[in-house]
Amino acid sequence: MSLSGIRTIAYSSLSASQYQISVASSNVANADTTGYTKKSATQTSVNYGSSGSGVAIASVSSNVSKYLLSDLAEATTTLGAATVTNDFADRLQSLFGSISSDSSSGDSLSSGIADLESALSSLASTPESDTLKAQVVDALDTVASQLRETSSSIQSLRADADGQIEDGVQAANDALNAIAELNTQIASAQARGESTSALEDQRNTALQTLSEQMNVSYYVNSDNQMRVYASTGTTLVDSKAHELSYSSATLVTADTVFDAITVDGNDVTGAITSGKIGALIEQRDETLPAAQDELDELASGLIEALNAVSNSGSSIPAPTTLIGPVIVSASDTLSATGTARIAVTDSSGVLVSYQDLDLSSYSTVGDLVDAIDSIDGLSASINASGQLTISSDSSANGVSIGDIDDSIGSSGEGLSNYFGLNDLLTGTNASDISVRKDILADSSLMPTASLSSDSALAVGDAALTEGDSTIAQALGDALAGDYSFAAAGGLGSTKSSFADYAGDIISTAASSATSASSALTTKETAKQTLDDSFSSATGVNLDEETALISELQQQYSTAAQLLQVVNDMFDALLSAAQS
Image 1 (spheres, rainbow, N blue to C red):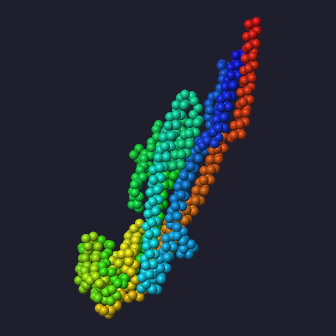
Image 2: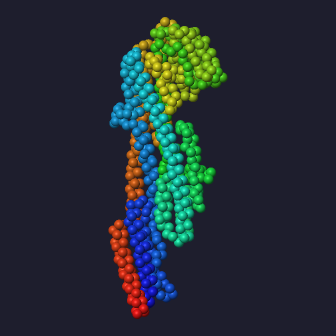
């Protein structure tokens, strides 16, 4: 071989060694860079004809397993979902509070109801005590406030989830655009014959970012272009990014209907079942509404049970006017049987006038109103809002209603309860439950006595007795006794006390929080295991790279020495030729 050929080989070896040292040094420098994978410069021999003429760097690549990368993307998706689920489970549990083993202490709905039971028990012993009445009203207001505030907080959590969905969609779009842009850069680099491994690392990192937000499928085609799809096949990245579109709601209530997440006008909400966005959708649309349903079942049960009792009683003195919240019209059919007693009493509960009404005699609400209006000392009408109103003609007297054996409607309610004339609680669910405003302002208006049903009752007799504990005791019994709750949220239909049902709600939330925490730990472990496997397969081993650099430096030194020898020989030949 000629000296020229040897020098060419030495130069190529020198150049290849220098390039490989540069690649190895870059590996060392980026060992802690997120998403960076070990690069390897592939060396190949260069031949002219049948003779070798040196070496060259054929390519720079990283050895990334597509199967491991796919598993890592899936683990990233499930971990993102588990993180969101755990966060919201903790926050929901905090809303409901905690209880002790006897459910009578702690900061929770259950303990609040237990306090109300205790206050009613005290009132039943001394029903004439204004102080004890005030304590019952305060305790009831506390429970109602807890229900309203918890309901509002649940909707706030839903609003937060909705806002995070919009943020997640933006993060997903950023990742989609990054993948599309990197596809373009990779195609350009390939056309120039340059290495694309660093760009592929960036693209894989963008894929992991996308996977954290939502579940996707993807593949890399023969042109080294990544294609990304939603789980239902909707294209997210082809020759360009197809962005997701979503705007969060400005106000979130239990009745809010949220917009769909769309891609090119197509609804893909149902395709996002995992990742942070998928978990946020589940929290907003399923988990939190289920908690709201449980809370509403508790609140509506309280309203129904306590109002049924309060409508069978009266305060002393009886209220001057009774107004029912139920909207009716005079032409409404009245399906009723039995007898209801409506009386006018003075400030001491002494009977002024009364009449027992045979409800089966009236076919419409208007007929009933006319009959009540004809009672001496009373006026009855349906006001402009459609509410039945019964008033004493004298401001010194009041109106009280007693159930003898009356039954109205399919539920067989008493007259006062059917129209809600003496409700203790207003509202329909947890979002609006409240103690009736006038009772909240003046606790002496709380019903504690029942109108006498004595058939021999006469004007001048005591129709309402100050020491009557019937209603206070009945309220306590209704609260502590078994109530039939319908299936709601994660709770099945059951019969239990209100405190126990509230405890079930709290326990369900606590159990969900525990499960979410356990699931998060499992997903974190699985993700870390895959991270370790990926790092082991593609990461930089500093010891190996340091040893490689030392070896390459030795090769570089050898090639340099060979080149020096060849140059010296050329100089010697040149000197010999000139002498």
